[in-house]
Image (cartoon, rainbow, N blue to C red; front, side):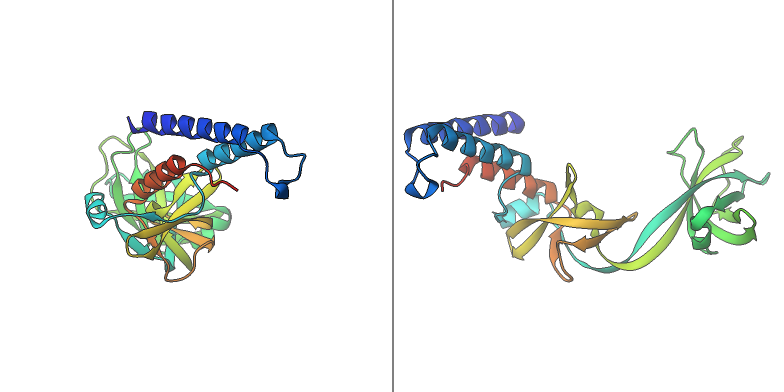
Length: 248
């Protein structure tokens, strides 16, 4: 229902812009060559740009009751260890307790004893096992890694996919949940004051398991919306389309 209403409002707004452009003469500042047809085309382009981008960079207000309903949560932009993972294939011993794998290339230098490992059979990713790296042995092609499972592995399963979790950083970062992807763009909502939020495009770096490095767009100690960001984004876009483009 909301999607249908959104499209209808966009259609009505576009038609309203065309009607105004056809009725109003161009201003003297635009020059005599800017006729009604050109004005309508320019306004149409602005409408389409608004629909693509979601609206101009204008704040959206959220009431306390709305924030409570969507469990709106904020998080600070701050330096944090960003976790990445190294994926490799491993085999398990006969006792079903120790995994062995080979890690090659530049990633081999990142493996350390004590790092956490997630392991699962290729045929069942839902069967996730926790393990920890117990030994790292240098080899010509890289390193051999031994990881001890916290429990007995799956019966009659000799091969596992292993994801070795590596902490990198610290980097200026935000929780992954704060980021809204719009094509090639990454958008977050920054709190200006309680209940008031502004969309901000950011440039990201290393993406980790929980946090993503931020290279540009926000600064240290900014408050960004994590849970509830999609609700604010929907409200922001809906209000922007309902208001229509600004008349110049």
